[in-house]
Length: 601
Ligand code: ATP
Image 1 (cartoon, rainbow, N blue to C red):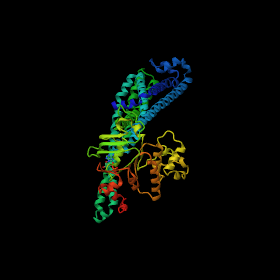
Image 2 (cartoon, helix red, strand yellow; image 1 turned 45 degrees about the vertical axis):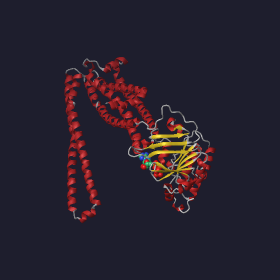
Image 3 (cartoon, protein in one colour; image 1 turned 45 degrees about the horizontal axis):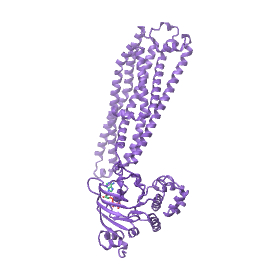
Image 4 (cartoon, protein in one colour; image 1 turned 180 degrees about the vertical axis):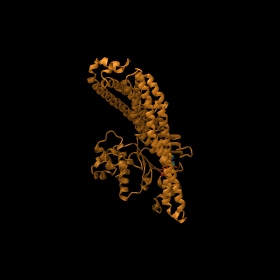
């Protein structure tokens, strides 16, 4: 119950619309009440005109209506059909309005929920996405949100409306004749209990039937795929016996199902008939006792019949709401997960930096099992290029991830221009870092917007300028719509070299004082490689660059090289010094660029 309330609380910001929908539901219930009661004067006054005077004395809803509207008995022939039309129209109008308002509530709640989820997710830390499978998050954002939508838009409306209708009908039958009503409700379980038993049996047996059917499928599959083995072992008869046994078992279950299925409908009709006969018996006695009129009895029976729909729909709505409660819990789980990278309460914006980066005894681990970085210390001066080299898995990417604060160091300090990165706001830090990764993420948008990604305004001239510097202008100009061409998701229509040059153009346009570059390991053809080299030289000019290096030229030209091994910086210096030391660097270099072995410098 607590969970259901939590689900309904989602709609609390839509108080106005909820109240309107509530009001309309009450009016629907009122018109349903009126509709049921209309049967009485139709039967008593239209069909038995003249016998009206002999009606048993009792307060009747329609008499109040006639008095209020000042309708004379003689005018009823004319007015009753009109009233019937008005009542049906009123019921329809308010059903429409209540459903419309409630659907509006549902759409608004779901929009807010989706927006909240998205905003929450976009601020989540990288470690969260490492841990939670994308498919799982997608299903929470789509199908779970959909289930809540169904519950609020459809079932909640049904729930409210049908509750009021049921209440109105119950009041109706008790007002018409409470003794008859009590008699009817005493006998009703007679119909409800066997109905519940039948449906339980049907569900159980059909589940067993499904299981047996899948056994048959398994045997078939085995017999077809294992046909050779069956022949080799001459076990055909054995297999046939097994199959016959399975089909016999399925046949028996099917026959039981057929028995229950075929019996249920006439049996229920019979029980319904019994209940009906009983109500008819009591009803006629009540009429002959002068307690009610035939019209009253007509209204009564109509009300009983009309209870079927709300009971049915309430039951269905309950199932949907239960599912939505589970979905709501799954969504709350996502929303409750706090981002792991948090700004300090005293965080201030990082002023424009010159690009001096220092790591001081930085250690880090992704999980508790083993440290990924241990006591990493280094310094990169303004406008210098620092190349990180090491075997795969050594920890190079982790080092640059820490500078962007995608993860936070477990211990030690990372400083930019002498300011600890943990003291400043995340956006001010990241806005001064340019990131060009191996896996260039392009969005499903135009080339121009992809280059200007994240920038509010960027003139076309400036975009073209950076594209030229990134050696991307020529291929962009050759696209059907030039800079306005749409590139498919993840840039599927572009070659990997073109994607990299777009990423470089993007970094150039952002013009950050510090550039983080993860050089692509994938081999490109000579021409592409040449273009990328020029583009990289342009982007690295006049800024501090931390690069995970895979190219000879980058390594050779770097101001400092840091050799990363097993999460530690084991060697550092310039290429020539490092190569002459005959240490890890030399081994790595010779391993990565064997063709240069004879001629290292
Ligand atoms: P490569 O050159 O292959 O990209 P690298 O030197 O950049 O390797 P890192 O990506 O920094 O290496 O990884 C260092 C270690 O941390 C590896 O053992 C890796 O398995 C582990 N690791 C990397 N990312 C995660 C993560 N998100 N969660 C847990 N462990 C990780």
